[in-house]
Image (cartoon, rainbow, N blue to C red; front, side, top):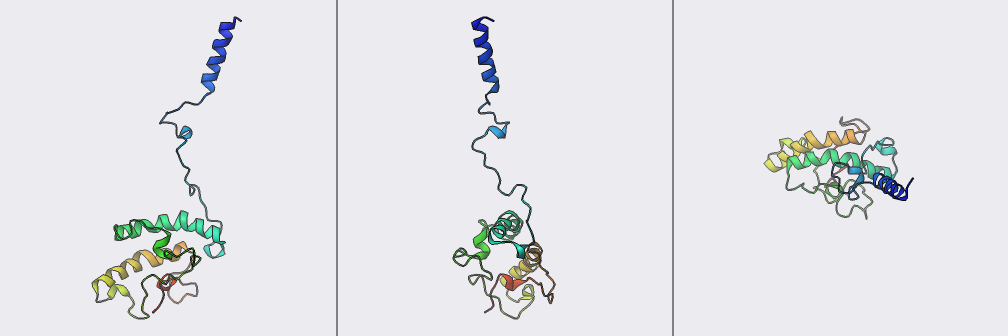
Length: 162
């Protein structure tokens, strides 16, 4: 085989083997693409049985994506940046994410349901928390939303009492 043909064949094989650049249809070649750390995530166990790292991953991959849209639909401006701080507070790391969060609105021991409060602002928040938050958080944490159940999760799971 002449040298010119070998050179052409070698160059052709080299070009065929090289990945293309700038091909928008092939995300596998996009060096700027960042893999979603939650893609394919499955909880390793019940929330109460998880270690701290597993709980952080569960909150990041399951709880925040589930609860953020609920809060943002309720008040898009107030909860535009919904995340860990929303419930756990700015000092969450120092407090080791301990709940209830002393910085959240303290709930009185009476006045249930808060959706019936004579103050319209309290009533609106009460209705939102009662219909969208407490039961869903109980489910996400593998707890009961039935008052009186020993495994009950409700308002005071996040909010302190006065």
